[in-house]
Length: 258
Image 1 (cartoon, rainbow, N blue to C red):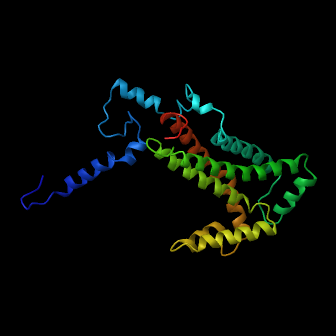
Image 2 (cartoon, one colour):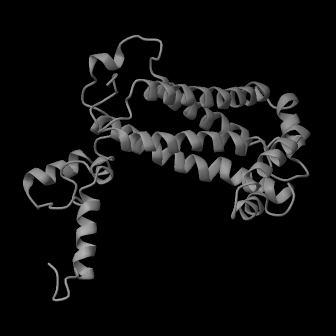
Image 3 (cartoon, rainbow, N blue to C red):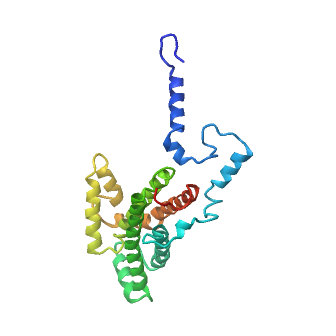
């Protein structure tokens, strides 16, 4: 309601903008029915049931799977294959951590020792390496399949954004692991890659300095990339995968062409 001067008070403008935000498509795609954060939520037995059913910890796995979700096709289970490769990389990565020291003096020697002194070391390292390449490929094909089938459309647009984040996390995981062998190929690949980041406007140079821990690729860069590769990025990826699987169920199961 306007005041005597014909102007709408700031408080009412803020309330009107807030109402539009909570009723927008973005808010509707994130908050499912019965969410306690949704505008107009009332404490009722029905809404309490919605809160439990929409909880990721209680209902991560579906009670039933639609027939089209298990139908044999050329794009069968690309998302499941990506998750399997993530588990494979986690297991083989833990094995490699027992025989790897993230220091510039011995990192390359440890990688060499894996091929000569450790039983099945070369096999596990190559499984980890090729598994990373396959995961990048499978995630890319999975995203392509979702895009070309139109499975990013409502009510799945929020899960599409989560999937895009997972794609970038997969690329960052592959990129951060490239430096760890500490050989000439790894050093120059990371140098070129971080220089590309440095070409970004405004924050490019600052981001490169943080990634390298200095002005050049050296021991500080190795420990930073190692920490990101084995702790930071896998933890964030696991959280986003849990949300991704949960939303697949809440949005009606595995998508068919729309």
